[in-house]
Image: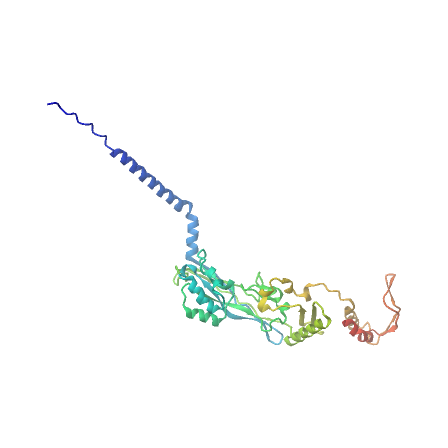
Length: 364
């Protein structure tokens, strides 16, 4: 019987498979090591900074701004309690519904709030473009109990007289910084006695952003601003502005300025200028910043004949002349050997009586 030849056995594939497996494992391990190096070495400092920023609480605490009063104690500028409205987009699950509820309480359209409520790139968003809301509106928002909506107490500057003495006072913006006038001078960007000095709170906070009560903290209390009392008399200021408005309307002028002073002390009792603005609504005049400057102290003015009263007052004060002193008006005034025609020759002139007679003409 002839023997049957058997086919040769195939070479085992196990070593090849093991090689592929080890190669895959090596690549995976290399990728993991690369990621570890990336996060633990290359990104170590940025991650540390982010963690510290999330864990640490470092807030500036605004100071209470001082009030401004007139000479009789009437309030010209003060502060009232209001609130900022904040949103934490990551906590808002149904932005459309939240926008509709907030819009009804804030008296705005839902579309004005929706972009801020859906901006998940930001941790916190101040709604209404930073506009502050009064306590009664804050109470409505608190009653809604919407997750992700927060109220932050603050203050807003108020001017009871509206446009009264606006150039003199200036205004305070939504961030509590004074601009122009006394608000800018004594409580502007560089601070001042009226604006006070803000405080600072450094502490640790939890995942909700609240301060951890038993952690280390550094508290520097704010220094509240001082009240400012002016020589301005509110009643005289009102009369000056009223008469200025009448004169501008009568003569169809583009503007005007009135300054009322105490002749004995030099105290300014009123300082009025037109055109003006309402500091309570300063943002409505943002495109007309020239209205914010005080023409009484910033614009050049040629006194002309109106300065003659200063010359005569000085002469009377020094007793160089008396109310009955006269001088010869030849129509020509010679100074340093030079002469020029001034006016028609009048002969003997009594300066004080001449001034009284000519005053109505100078007013125009």
